Length: 464
Image (cartoon, rainbow, N blue to C red):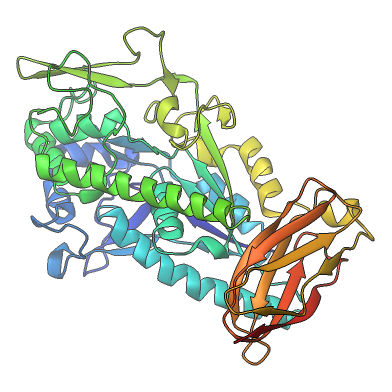
C-alpha cells in the first residue's frame, strides 16, 4: 500500500507571519504580555489590511510572509488564545521523512485566496512525494490525507470541492472546524466580549485589536451562518439582521463564501451518485464537547448579548470557540458521526489520543481485496449497434456487492468517452447503458476495489 502524503493546514492564527524585515509581526506571546499592554499597537497596525481587499493579496507594508507553523503559545486578546502546535508538530515529525507537508498561510486573507495557494502547494508537494515513492520502488500512486485545524478545514474543502482537487484526496480530518461559523467571530468584530475577557487591556490596544479584525475577510468568513439570532423581528440569521459594528457588505461576503462551498459540495455529491461512483475522499470531523460555548446572540437597543444555549434547549457545549452545531458538517443530518473529545479548541490538535487516531487515518488498510480474494466477473457486450442505439453492458459475478465501473474508451488515444457505474439488476448481475458515436470503441469494465480481478475488455462497433 502506498504511503499517502499528509498535509497539515493550520487554523486562524496558526501560522507565523513576518514583515519585510523578517520580524514576527504578531509575536504577542504569553511570555511578553507585559510588553503587549505597554504599547505594541504597531504590530496590529501591520496586521490591519487596507480596505476593499476582497480575495486579493496585499502588497507593500501590508503584505506579510507566512514562515512556518506556530510552535509557541500566543494570544490575540478577545479573539483566541492559541497554545500552538508543538505536540502536533512532534507527532508529524515522527512520520516517514518527506511524507508530511505543512501549509502555512496568511490567515488574515480570504479563504478563497488561501485555497488557491493551497492548490499550488499541494500539487507541488504531491508531485515531489510521488517521485520519492517511485524512486523507492513503490508502484502505487499516493494521494493526500489532509489534517486541518479550525479555519484550515474551510480552506481545504474549498480547494477540494470548488477548485477541483477532490480526486487527489484520500481523506480529510477536520479538528474543530467551524463549518457553520462561530459566534466568537461576532465578538471579535464588534468588541462585545464577555465580561472579564478584556478588563486588563487598555482601550487604545483594544481599539487596535478590533480594527485589525474588521479588516480581515477571513474573520468575516467565520461568522455563524446558522440561525443564531434570537428575538429579532427581521430574522434569525446575521445576513438578515442589522448588528451594530458589523460591516453588512463583508457579512454578505461571508455568507456567499459559505453558500458557494455548500452548493459545490451538493452538486459534486449529486454528480457522484448519478455516475454510480462513490465520493473520492472520506470526511472525518473531530470536535470538542467539554466547554460552555456561545451559540447564539440577541440584539436589543443597540446592545449585543450572548448565550450558550438555544431558547428551548439546555446548554450547548463545544470547544469554547466552536459550538457542536458548527463542528458538524452542514450536509450531515446530525453529529452522531463526529468524533468528540472533551478538549478546548486549540488543545484538540495536541492531544496524544487524537494523534493515535490520526495515524489510523494515515495508514488505513484496504481490507476489501482480502475479503474478495479470487472473485472475478464476466461481461456481456454487443459486438455492433446502430448509430443512436443504446449500448447495454452487463456483468455477471458470484459476488453480489461489487463496485463495477464501465467505460467506453478510444482504442487509438485511450481517451475515455463515457464512464458510469454498473448497477445491480436484481437478477444477480450488473447493468449499465452507454451511448457512443459511430466508430470503433473498447468497452472496459473494472472492479477498482478488487485488485485480483482483471479489467475486462471487449470491442464495440457503432455503425453509421
